[in-house]
Amino acid sequence: MVKIPVPISDRPYSVVLGRGEATENPALKHLVETSTSAFLITNRTIWAEYSHRVRSKGSVLASAVPLLIPDGERFKNLQWYEWLCREVVRRGADRKSLIIAMGGGVVGDLAGFVASTVLRGLDLTQVPTTLLAQIDSSIGGKTAVNLPEGKNLVGAFYQPALVVTDPLFLKTLPPRELRAGLYEAIKYGVVLNRELFEFIEARIEGLLRCDLEALETVIRHCAAAKAVIVGQDEHESGVRKILNFGHTLGHALEARTSYRRFKHGEAVGWGMMMATRLAEKLSLLSPGDSKRVVACIRAVGRLPKISDLADSTILRHMRHDKKAIAGKLQLVLPTEIGSGRIVEGVDVKMIRGSYLEIQKENFASR
Image 1 (spheres, rainbow, N blue to C red):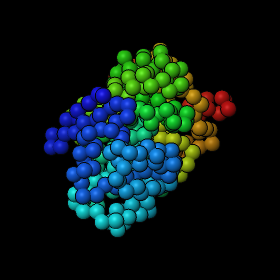
Image 2 (image 1 turned 90 degrees about the horizontal axis):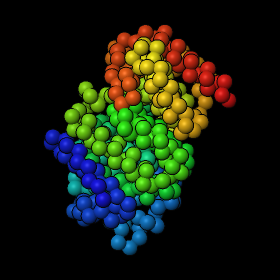
Image 3 (image 1 turned 60 degrees about the vertical axis):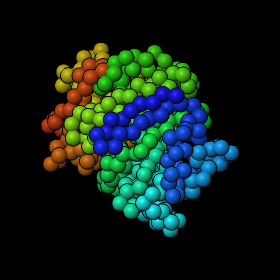
Image 4 (image 1 turned 90 degrees about the vertical axis):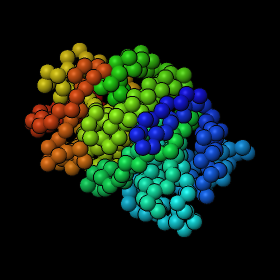
């Protein structure tokens, strides 16, 4: 078992990483036993796969009340947020109740937003079940729901009391979900950690086969990097913005397709390729590094098509992104493998050109 501290000044917590921890972790057991009631928010797909494990004799989650939502990004909305809030209240929640989010980014974001608002704040534990959630979204306290106008536009920063990361969940993860998480892992390598990028680059075949040892290395590196950055910048006012590499276009693609076509990591994959090409055009990134980054992203697998998505509508959605200031885009661009920076005021024509370039390649490859 590995414990990674998240050094938030007023409420520090830990990410616990280990096989079997989801149903055996003593810290999670203590949180459940000292709460007046515990609510396990998850989706129907995960519950069908893991309810026997949650309910098994000796499981620390056995007494939690399950609340099930549909599976998919399009259900991370105000309607399901309201349903969960009302269910928690109807079932007798008080200020010493505990919310447990067991799932991927959608469940974690939605359950976290519920915890942050019901009775002005309930204790929250994240139990991420996807690779993307284990390396990124479960850590750092971002909670939100989507609007038709854009992704994660309604939400709050609300830190969990504990994150319990159990790699055994990944053994039953659909291949597409595994690939979506690997795109996010590449993000960390490109803008923060060259060693991690080179590890992913060298071990991509094993990672795609769900080699748990290799995946645990990736999770540990990403989680540790996220913990340090969150400790430095909890509310994303400075250095934490670097983790938005690929997300400006990624969020636009998700919103434009009504959160139905792309897994979040897939949309970020396209966003990273566009940002990488743009960085090369601006002479911030060498052609050699640009080629390596794009090749690594493509090695993960074929991404859903973007060849039918007009640049004008995508740019409009990009301007609605919550990171835009006064309509001006802030883009995270790599400067070399392992380092990146935030760039403001990039010429829209250059952004459009980079988008059209990757769109043309997508069209040619289909």
